[in-house]
Image (tube, rainbow, N blue to C red; front, side):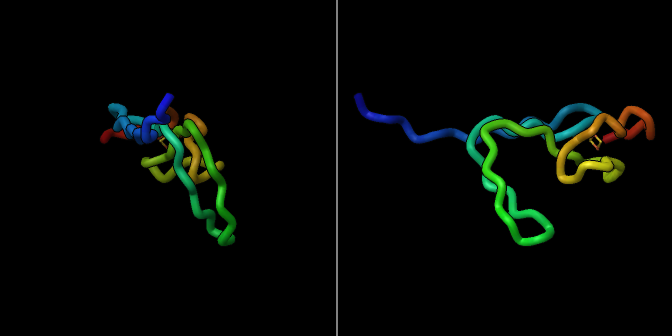
Length: 64
Ligand code: FES
């Protein structure tokens, strides 16, 4: 059976993170690379666990 190419989907949630579904390589601030199949990425800037969402967008009432 032929393997299909993976598809990367990124959903922009209302007032929340980017939901990534599909293989993605994240290049961290220290230069290391982390490979994920799924991730919730902060886009509000308030997360204490960047680049990941930690739910802080709710506390700051992020709109976007
Ligand atoms: S989007 Fe959730 S903490 Fe920033």
